[in-house]
Image 1 (cartoon, rainbow, N blue to C red):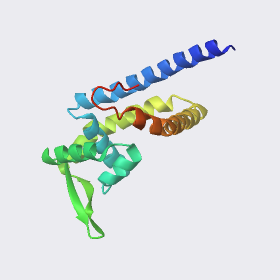
Image 2 (image 1 turned 90 degrees about the vertical axis):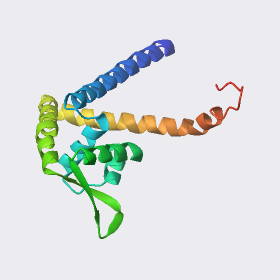
Image 3 (image 1 turned 135 degrees about the vertical axis):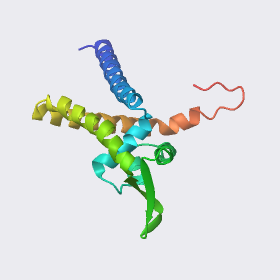
Image 4 (image 1 turned 180 degrees about the horizontal axis):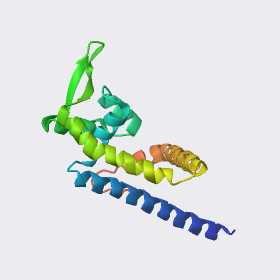
Length: 169
């Protein structure tokens, strides 16, 4: 395959992957809106439901790659709406653990549980081998892109330091 053909093929495949990622994100965002939640609030409830009560903001941020402030805002909103409570533990008073209120458990049953069932049903339609491949290739793609972005980071930082009228490449 010629270099130009390979570049075109890669560009087309990346476009398809990125469009699919966007479509998947849209599915979750629309679902969240349909159950009257923000994206972040849905994921906070999802993680608390699947990991069990007692997970922390830090757990969610680290395992789901969310900015701390995003999760903090979602937690405060869910707490104000009466779905969650946050409590400190004697071991670490700074780290707040998440607990469902009764209203939060009901929201979990009506919003998170149906989503989990849909995910399980759709993923279960793939063969065991397809599921393994999808997970492995998704993780590999993420790791490789992260590596490329880390390599580019010094360049990106240099080119974004323009002052005043400087043009940034």
